[in-house]
Structure formats: structure tokens, C-alpha cells
Image 1 (spheres, rainbow, N blue to C red):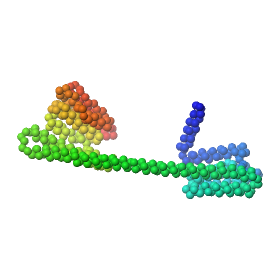
Image 2 (cartoon, helix red, strand yellow):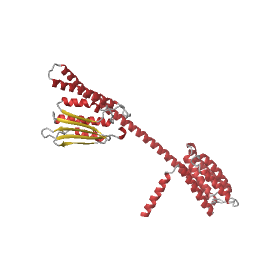
Image 3 (cartoon, one colour):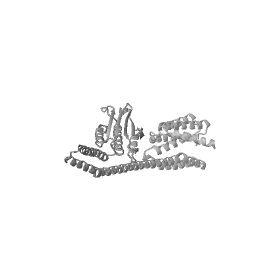
Image 4 (cartoon, rainbow, N blue to C red):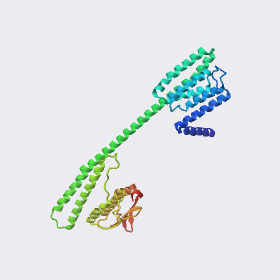
Amino acid sequence: MCCDRAVHAGISRVVSGLRKLPDWQHDALIVISSLLVGSVLFATGLYPLFRLDDEIPLWVRVLLFGGVCAVEAFRRIAPGTALAVGTAFLLIDCVIGVSTPTLVVYADLLYAATLYGPRRLSRDMVPIAVMTSISTITATVLLVPGWRATVLAAFAVLPFLLIPVWWATNVRQHQRMAEVERANARQLAKIAELDRTAAVAAERAHMARDLHDVIAGHLSAIAIQAEAALSLKDEDPMTRVVLRSVRENSVSALEEMRAMINLLRADVTHPDEPTAPARLAQLSRLIESAQAGGMRLDVRVDYDDTEPLPAAVDLTAYRIAQEALTNAMKHAPRTNVVLELRRTDTEMVLEVVNELRNGGSGGGLGTGLLNMKERTAAVGGSLTAGPADGSWRVRAVLPLPEVER
């Protein structure tokens, strides 16, 4: 049983290798096989099918066979022409005595003309093969006496004329059906992709409308109310600083909201649409807002801000700093916070350290920490957050791609 499996596996590998050959190599192998089979038949004397003239030299038959094999080399390139020339060789061979090798090659020419020829030729091959078979049998009855020759002609017509044409017709029909199925599959895939694109576009448009109608409206109201409060006479400078910070933050948030709305409304089929602007350049606004809320912030920046950062790293660094400072203001208000930014040739390091108040964890239980980790992972970086030496530390390491440096 193991030997049978090995044999089947070997045959499968050989067949698979033959299917991967180019067309011209495949045809060359067929011609070589025909020559080998014909040579064996001529060498063993098994070549004659009908004997009409025993005085014809063997080299004449071999020459005819070589000619039809040469024609077979064009079975795929010019199947109709090859069949016509092969028919001429076959007629000459029939006159001097039908030989099996020539008939075998002619059967392959019939197969190739039906399979590779124009559609009209392929469609006409079936009636041509039927009429040829009837004519061959009739000619045998009239020219060769005895019923044995007629029976032999009938059995010869079946494998050499009818079966090649019938087989090639079925193969061509299956190929046409497979091509139709492939075309239908491509069409269905295209329709599914269009449906998916339309669904994504509709969802993005819905999100853009919600952002514009709800959140942007609330931010506008905050900005207007802050501006109205600033117009009142209030001698408390801290109050005015806080109101001014509220107004600036709301206006900044509105600008970001408009960028997000424009991005959501952009055509999703064009990946090069402009995205939200880089954010570390606006870090000063974030610092002012945090200080206005009572945070004692120590900022340590160690990188050349004139050298551009990759957009994804720039935005990620800003969002992590924003989230870390927001958490510090929420869970440890009016404490000392250190924000440090360092850049090397290979990475950007962002670290935010704040004091813990009343033994709290300082990290919160919301989704802020999860969002920071997801943002960092999206650019291939790493993030750690947790208590360290009596403080809460958030440290993000963002790699700088070599092509962006």
C-alpha cells in the first residue's frame, strides 16, 4: 500500500509539472512522443493498418510520417492550417497503404483543431468527423472486398476520428463554462467590493453628520459661552485665565472636529486624502491648557522640532501626551507633573510622570490607557503605564522608520 501511495504521489507530481510547462514545451513533448511511438511501430513492423501496395519502400512511409509530425508542431499555433496539411499527408498515406503512426498523429491534429481552432471550425468539426467516418466506411466497402475490412475500418474510425473530436469538444465546452464561472466570480467580487465601499461611505457620512450636528454644536456653545463670560467684568485673574483656556480649547477642538469631519466625508477609495494635521507642533496649547487648570507642569523637550516627524508618530505622540495629562488632571489635580520628550535616530520617547495623591493609582479605570496602548501598537511602539517611585509614569517608545528620518 505504501508503494501504491508513492507511485500515485510520483504520478501526481509529474502531471502537475507537465501542466506548468509553457505551451510550446507542451507541444514539443507531444511531437517527441509521436516520433518515439511511430519509430517503435516502424521498427517492429506493426505500422500497417491496411496493405494496398507492399512494394512501397519503408523510407517513403517514414518520410510521410516525419512530415505529419513536423506539421504537428503547429497544432496550437495554426490548428486549421495544420489539419489541412495533415489531411494531405494522410490522403497520400492512404493511397500507398494506411499506416498506424500517421493515423495516430492525424487524430491529434483533429483534437487540436477542435480544441484550439476558431469557434466556427470547432463547431463544424463534429459533422465533418461524422461525414468523414461514413465516407471512409463506404469507401472501404466499395474498394476492399470482404466484410473484415469493413469491420476493421469501422473500428479504426472510432478511436482515430470520432473520439478525438468528441473529447476536444467536451474539453472546450468545459473551458468555456469555467471561463464564464470565473467571469461571474469576478463580477460578484466587484459587486461585493462596491457594496462594501458604499456601506463604509454611508457609515462615515453618518458619523460625520453626528459629529457635526451634536458634538460640534456643543463645542460651539462652550466657545460662545466662554466668550460671553470673558466679556463680563470679573476682577479675578485666575477665573479669566480658566475661561480663556476653555474658549481656546473649545475652538481648537472645533478645528480638529472639522478636520475629522472632512476626513470622514472624503472618498474612501482614495487613500491619499489629507488626514488630521501633525500635533506636536501644537503641544504648547496643551501645556497652557494644563497649566490653566492648576497643574504645575515641567516640560523637557530634547529634539529638533524643525526636523519633521512621520505623521503617524507625530499624531500618536501628541494624543498620548494629551491623554496622560488629562488623566493627571482628573486623578491628581494640582500636582507636579513632568513631561519629557526625547528623540534619537531610531525612536521618539515620551514620558509623563505625575505625583500620586492620597495613595491613588493615578491611572483611572476608563478606556484612556487602552487607547494609548492601541495607538502605540499601531505604529509599532511600546507603552508602559503604572506606579513608579511614588509617582504614576506613562512611557511610550515610538520607533522612527528609517525612510522617514
